[in-house]
Amino acid sequence: MSYARFGADGSDVYVFLNVDGTLECCGCSLQEREWVDDESSPIFKGYLKSIGEKIKTNFNTTDEMIAHLKFHQKSGQSVPEETFKYLLEDRERNDHWMATYNNKLGEGHDWPQCDCASDESLDT
Image 1 (cartoon, rainbow, N blue to C red):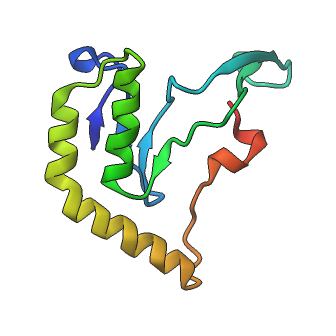
Image 2 (tube, rainbow, N blue to C red):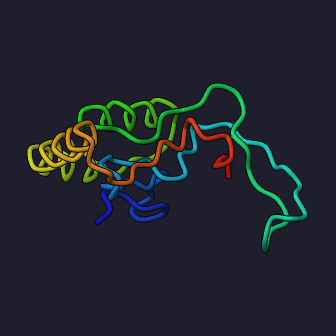
């Protein structure tokens, strides 16, 4: 389930609870990018590569996501008020699930988790 989708209610953000145990700001427009031509890249023959400081887009708590979305607003982007309302309504359940999931990873469970910000090959 998403908390906001691009274009819905004028939203400039796409936010959802990811299966990797985080709240994600998908396609975060705060990240500066540049186009890189790459003939081996299927379909588009290139990709967008992050440049400058990497912007965190996956968060382990609802409060972290809310702070991130407020930064979007301060940058002049639209974040529907319902997004904050729904995130707060689900905060207890989501934060518990994210903490449990991420603690299980720390206990040696072999559950997949993506740390896309640290993987240069995923700058697409």
